[in-house]
Length: 264
Image 1 (cartoon, rainbow, N blue to C red):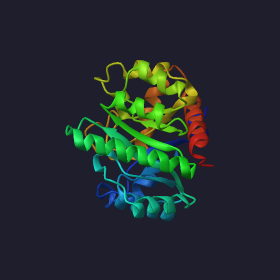
Image 2 (image 1 turned 90 degrees about the horizontal axis):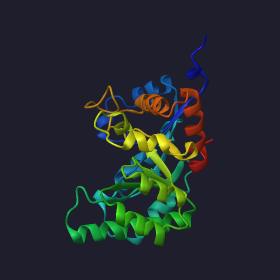
Image 3 (image 1 turned 30 degrees about the horizontal axis):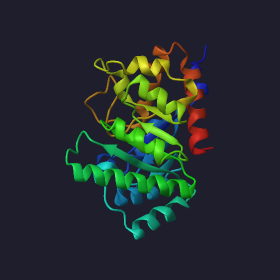
Image 4 (image 1 turned 90 degrees about the vertical axis):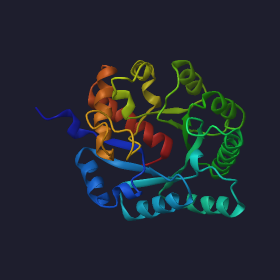
């Protein structure tokens, strides 16, 4: 009997394979992903330089689409020239989102820098609205401020909370607001605490699968460089905890990626 997985495919909806970690084997990593059933990869920029690399990578590789934006750890007071550059990139047919943007209070403790993160985040939410693009949001230990901003400034935005790490109550609130939730390698960790139970309870039509390559490798690759092929491991784990077949999960999450990003 043929493996049911051979008739379906996956999308890694969040990766960073433009960076130096993949300089030695970038094309091989993309090929390994394809061999593992990953048909598309969405590569996100985290500053202007990596956004430019992401656009170039999407032009060079049929399987790669991209997002452009400024990560909170690289937050700046966006200039008009930078906003215009982001807007110009957005016209490219393979630029499908603004991201990775958001808030990160884990690494940043300075209140002025946190305020700059919020300012940069709100500016990019507004830009995405004007460009009619979804956003990919980074949220680490900034749940309260993130929700407050989305309720006030992000009411007309759509997108995904990348690598969701909040409570089920927060997930329920985000779902009510229409957001997708990204599920990454940490769901497979033995110390994942409540995350597997939260993922088990999410509505199927709101889940996206991600690697965040080269970070957050799922088991059994934890501690090693992550790559898009490993989204299969996360998919298999999520299918198991949700008591559905791999094919069912793959089909639904691929449909979700298509609906959010218009990939195909």
